[in-house]
Length: 140
Image 1 (tube, rainbow, N blue to C red):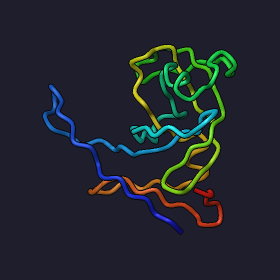
Image 2: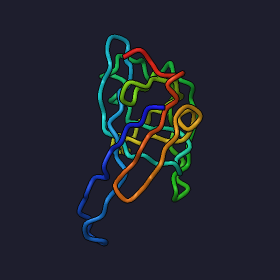
Image 3: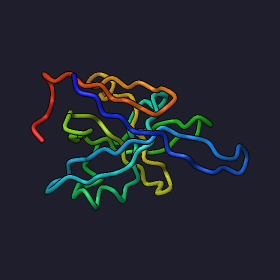
Image 4: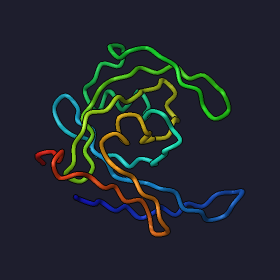
């Protein structure tokens, strides 16, 4: 097994002062090359979601994705387009459905769908650890 560890990110909030959030660096495979992004690891989110502008960076045509909707924690319905992309964490790669939203201020979220089927996520006091089986490891 291979493990990849990401320490929590310290952020300053108005209501709670300094808090930590689980953030990881992942790589999304675009049409020509990979793009590295920092994501909030959110096992409460069904699908990974990103703003539409990331499609331009990845060379993906937003409109070709499957149209659907997701609901936020406040029950707001957000239109999305679903694409299937390669995601890499460390040297472990897997295919996952990801959503792109026309709402540009949506945070970069790594959700459960297709990710938890492929890689185990553990949260502890120091941060987030991803545990991957070496048998499924990508060639990077």
